[in-house]
Length: 99
Image (cartoon, rainbow, N blue to C red; front, side):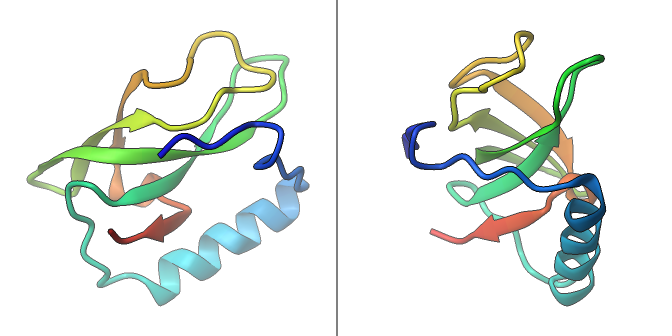
């Protein structure tokens, strides 16, 4: 999945971002995350905007831990780039697309 930054950028305030995260986590508490699925995660660096980007799951580990590859080109972040490996937990997931 290669998502162009020119067509997949949405700016959302921190307040609404947290509301959306809470809503997703409450309604998808039992959703199974599998290898190949795509999840949205929050990325941030000091003194920069937070970006919410898609990560494709490449490894599923015990204790709700995952490894995936970033599927977006960050607009404002410099410490991560397209296709970088990312380690995350289920509690980090903001949205989910099953494949």
